[in-house]
Length: 125
Image (cartoon, rainbow, N blue to C red):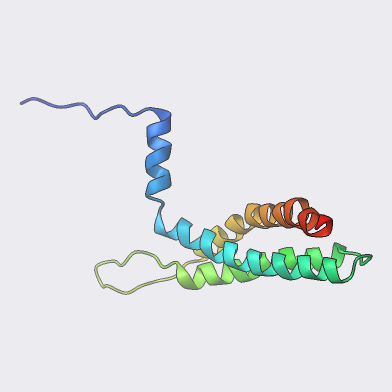
């Protein structure tokens, strides 16, 4: 009986495969948070452009807390555990935690793009 060893893939091949086939719960968490953060970032950017001298500390804090809370809730509702033998779909708090952790870097990236890339381009125009 001949046993074949699995093919060893390079680091790049493994990451490329992961990029092409993301796990559905992670993809859903990222998409939910990205949609919420994009909408909130656009609103925050519009506020900063309409009120040039306004203090943005409180609106930014509300933006971050709102995206984290809503993203966590949406991920909780959207990501279900796999069906077991009974076929009943179940939700878990881990899905909400996944949404929370996915929201942190997404909020940061949306704020960086909005205020370091888009805002200077709009102000200069």
